[in-house]
Image 1: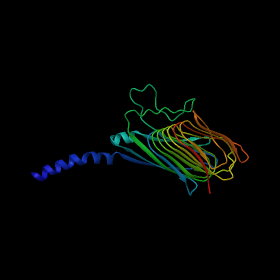
Image 2: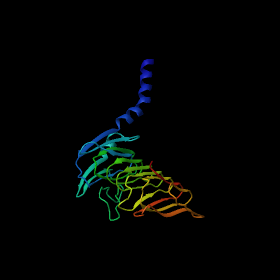
Image 3: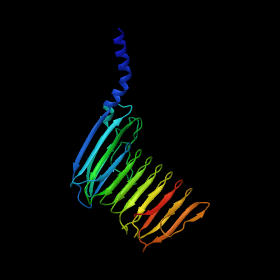
Image 4: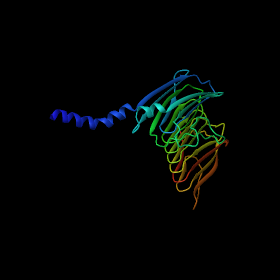
Length: 267
């Protein structure tokens, strides 16, 4: 009798853990994105990590998991692969809530925004992706961290409630709302303007010592520091630095409300 009671108690204790372990699914895709093309990844809940691959194909993996949801909730979250004229879009698509007046979609509106309502849905989708040399990367999530490092192309990355780390041989831009932004710029002379912004976080940029750009750095309630021979202007509105580095060129715009901005040179 005692053994049956113990087994019953153990089953009750283990049930949430077993349910959590079952609420998980894995996904994988491989495909070609031509050199000069763009791999775009659009997530909502979950981290995105992109690294330099060794082959000629993009290798994308994802893990879908839920803390409270069950298998059906996990399976209901789809990962779409949509071919574009200039590359591929990988998009996490959540089921549309019953009372929503708009359908969830991977298609962007005229402002570039995608409607993906995740109310009452706790399924996270974490991506790990390898990209070949020459492929550009455009990644974004809402709740999660983004890390796109070692990329031999350009990178544009963003998160709302997470940190963003980027490192690439080409142009890079990174944005967050409540996270730090760290970027390593491989090109000594960026071809286009670069943007690094957050609201409640620090911005740290590492650039070549032979960097050529026009700098515009502003922190509302923090400091601005740089390895270059430039001095920020201090006022009651924070610290601002405008100046030319090297021969000047594209504008590097770094902005934070309540953090610190640092530009350092690679050794």
